[in-house]
Image 1: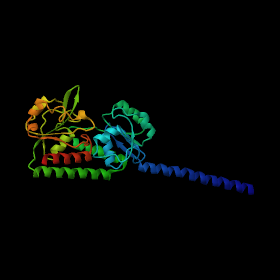
Image 2 (image 1 turned 135 degrees about the horizontal axis):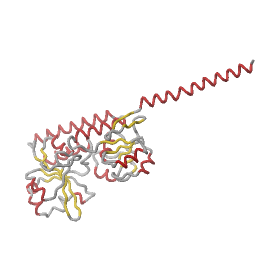
Image 3 (image 1 turned 90 degrees about the horizontal axis):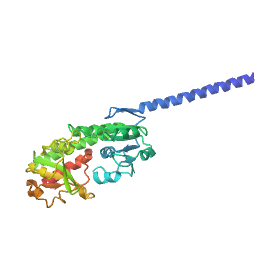
Image 4 (image 1 turned 45 degrees about the vertical axis):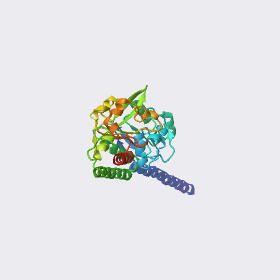
Length: 324
């Protein structure tokens, strides 16, 4: 009888332990379910995360800027050196792994980082995105939209914030941007520059030929210029995504009396043909805005396709240039 009671006790204990064993994982599963995040990205894909992503890779500089703005230090960044050169408005606070170029990220390098999330843009090829999805969840944001650049910039920031649990910081960043725009608009109006025509462009030299890329009203900078009370002087039609056009030095003759602004990089001499290659060009020197000294090289390190922090830096730069 004693043996029977002992056996029964052992069985009862086993049942209790088994019960404890089955309820614990169920609770963990419920917790995971409560913390999980499901988003629909720009490609229409459903992206599900166990919780706010912490180890994040960015394949394009605008999404990297968004991560930095939201207080998320990316573990992997495409072309780290290039980002540090062209986007100083939102500097990296850590030392992320360089994952290769923005157009061709290294799958092996990204896989080795074991990220929670990879943030890409719709500019990245479908083939590359497909490979990335085998490594980790991929959140695609729309690269740009000429019909509403500022709205798209903020939508991208919000989507990344949802994925990283940083919506409060996104709201603060958008508010800071709106405040800066209002301040810039007032400063220009006070200086009598409301409605002043401006033409922003960048340019480069290849095979001794100068190419100029106008930022039309459909570009992000064009939208910001209009938001602070300036008028875009370009009449050329830009592309549907970025609002960019193409011309040459002769194409600048149609601008007339405008403020001409541009940015380049001291690290890349070919990015500034306006003060280098065109200095002795007869057509360039004959332009009204050149004769009047209304050519403004804005500070380096403001990414023309960036987020709220780059755009705040741009507002400061253009207002300072026009009112000095």
